[in-house]
Each structure stands twice: as C-alpha cells, then as structure tokens.
Image 1 (cartoon, helix red, strand yellow):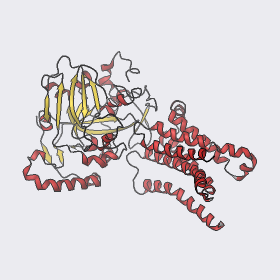
Image 2 (spheres, rainbow over the protein chains, first blue to last red):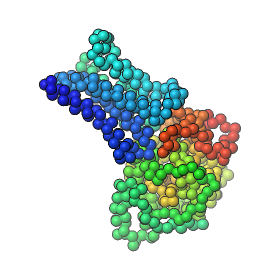
Image 3 (tube, chains in turn blue, green):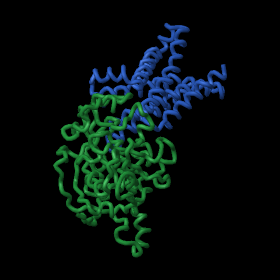
Image 4 (cartoon, each protein chain N blue to C red):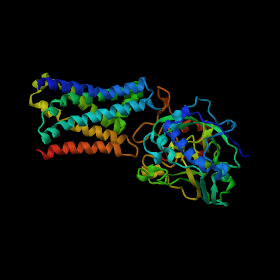
Length: 191
Length: 309
C-alpha cells in the first residue's frame, strides 16, 4: 500500500509536468505557438494553474462523496503544481510580455482589475506554498488550517481574473467558475 | 479601369492544410458543374495582376501571410484566434452582392463584380492596430472607399456611412451564439469615409482575400482600432444619424464610435500605451492615430478625444 502510494505520487508528479513538456515541445520542436507566441504561453500557463487549483479543491469533495483517502494525500502535490504554473505564468508576463517594465507592471496591478485580482490570487498561493511543509504545519498548529483556507479566495480571484480578461465570449471562464462553484458548494452541503 | 485577374496556382505551403483540402474537395464538386457556370463564378484561386504601389504605404516590414491569415478576430467564424481560419471554408463569397442605400441618388443592389469594375485596385501596406494591444503590417489590395461612394452620389443629408456584415449562421456559424448582436455593424463619419487612407479591401499579399480576413469585401481604416474595419460587407448605407456600431452596442464604456488609436486613452481593462507588433519580442510605443496623425488628426481638431474615444 505504501509502495503503491509512492508510485501514485510519482505518476501524478509526471502528469503535472506533462503540460509544461507539451508547451516546450510546441515552442522548440514544432513551431506550434502561433502568430502571437507570448500570448499563447501566458494563456497556457494560466489555464493550467487554474485547472490544477480546481483539481486541488476537488480532493475534499471527492473524499466526502466516495470515502477514498488517496485524493487528499495528493492535495499538497497538486496545490504546489498549481503554484508552480502560477509562478511560470507570472514570470512569462513579467519577462516575456513586459520585459521588466516595472512602471508598466505596477500600473497594471493598480489600475487593471484583471491584473489586480490575478496578482492577489498569486500572493495568496505564495503564502500557502511557503507554508506547505510539515515544519510550518507543526509550527502554526491550528492556525495552519485557517491559513490554508485562503485557497478558497485564491481560486475565486483566479476565476475572476480570467473572466475580467475576456472581451465578449465568457463561455470558457464561466465553465471554470461553474466547476469552482460546485466544488465549494459541495463543502457547504456536507458540513 | 478594370484590373485583370490572372490565374495562378497558390502556394500550398502557406494554405492551412484543412482549408486546402476543403477547397480541393469543393473544386472537385465544382469541376462537374464548371461547364454550366460563367467563368467569373468559377471558384478558382485568383491572384491579382501587378498592382500600383501607393504613397500611403508604409515601408515597414510586413507580417507573414501565415500570421495575417491564422490570427484573426472574426467572431462570426469563432472567438478563438485560430477559429476563423479553420471555419472560413463555410463562407461562400461568390456570388456576392452589396446593397447601397440610404441617402444616395442611386440606391440599389449590386453584384460585387459590377461594384468593383470601375475601380483600379492598388496595394496599400498599412499598420493594423488591434484594440487588444497587438499590431501587424498588412499588404492589402483595395481602392479608396470615397471613390465608390461618389459613384452613388450621396445626398446633402448624408452625414455618416453605415456598414453591415453578412448575417447567415449557416456560413458564419459564430452567429449562432449571441456573443455580439448580429449582424455586425460599423460606421464612419462622412469625412472619415471620404479620406484617401480609408479603403475597401478585396485582397492581401496580391491574392483574393481569404474568408478569415473578411472576404470578399472589407473595410480598412488604418488609424482606428481593428474592429472598425468591418468584414464581409453586404450593405453600405448613407445616413443622417450616427449609426450604431457592434462593439459600442456591446460595451459602450469600453468601445466608442470613433475608436481612433490613442495611447493616451486606455481601454478600461488594459493599457493602450504600448503594443506588441507580431513577430517582435519587445513591445513598442503605440502612436496617436496609429502613426497616421499627419494625415488624419485634422479631422478631429477641437474634439475632446478622451470623451469621443
């Protein structure tokens, strides 16, 4: 059982790296990023940060519905990968899109709600990522759990970030928003 | 003068594979009925003959045919950037007719061929600045809109020109969902429409316009954000009142009637100060009126462009 769980985590680890591998292959081997590769990269990384965040949030409802224990044991791995893609997403914006134009970046953060919400979500995820180890868990005690409830506002902000970016076709961000609503709603129902 | 169209094989490596196959299939069907069709209606890929160059053309390097035809905002063919190229095969551009009505002495419905016949097509290499803060340089084939309008003799009451895109969800499947209110409509003030920079385009890169770029007839107004340059036009009306425009109707606080490229007026949700020229790594400064200020700024003298955005 212990052995199989180790292999499960290794498998999920590799699966979580697959999107990045796909992106690198498109960029380096297939010239597959289209006419606006920087935009493609940023959107792709943001999509996967959000998807992994939703997967992280699916662990608890899955346990509530099925009684399985393994989804919850994958939760930290998934959450850290969500943050990993969020870091790459922010790096791509800072380096590829803005090329360290700090004044322009600051203006974006302060003046543009979709950047503000994205940045706030990122900061919340940062706090969760740096306290995700067992030492922090011990040190923070019961406050650790309170702190890590920040994943809820982080996910909501991330979904709002996506919605505010879109010009007219809200279908895709609303699908993510609907999934998030279900995942959060299931928790309230099973309380 | 009527510019002759010469037949040429189009390089298949620049045609998206699916579109290429679709066209082959269509040609196969068309071949059977070819004897029944007049030559003008045969759907053969066409290349324009040598085109006069224009002093209005920019000398900047042009974007590739692939970039221009694979990264499009044409929501009637899908809202993703690559959707229009994929769905363009559904749009049937021949036969095509355009209604010209409203405040003109000679209203009517005209076959596209007849509409184009008196005009000399020329190449116009223009910058295109999208409201989404990216830009391209595109070698259009077209002629001044003003020359066409004059032929139909606008009345003294004509103050604006209103344009309408084809409304046919069979050919433009994006119209099955109300992302915008269909059909797409756009408009210009009369002096903007008569300005020599404003053209109707029928081609790019010396070839007939592909569907995703607004075939067979589209507007190009290079000093305004790209959404003003309405695609696949079926109606041109001269009006006394300012006509409604599609994006303004959808989000009036974000998109105005004028939509002149203006780095000093940000979109409420993103900056317009800089833009990414596709193919370039670093952003560049956005120029007032997309760099055409010398020619067009006078049209707006005395107007507060932060109010009339």
